Length: 155
Image 1: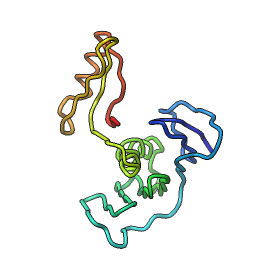
Image 2: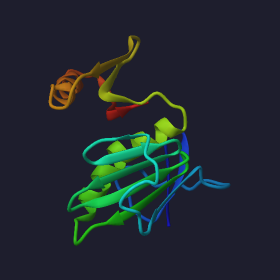
Image 3: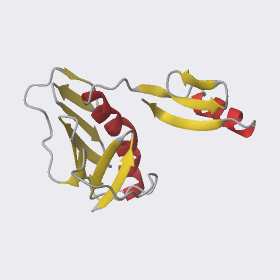
């Protein structure tokens, strides 16, 4: 089991997450990430799209050829990798869409964007559709001396 702290949450994970620094914490974790079987559909989804279904307290994401993910009650993420999908691909969706759904279930405002910080000036958040240049713009500011706060999920 790996232990991490991110977004103010203590996380115990069966999936190694090298993108997040390991951190020992005392007490019970706020979030458990584990591997297990996941249904192909929720019983009564309130909303659904091509790759996802959601109902109160549950979010199911199916990424063909990669994994199925089930986020429950803002405190657990179950992952069922598909075929021989690379662990890096499983982590990619876990750290973006799936973690974003968990944070949303916890009542946090989750925005798809990039955030930078300039000492003395505060934070600037870039929001936009996928591939609209948010990360590219943030990277340009980082090259000019700003600090990157976050990219993809801004809470």
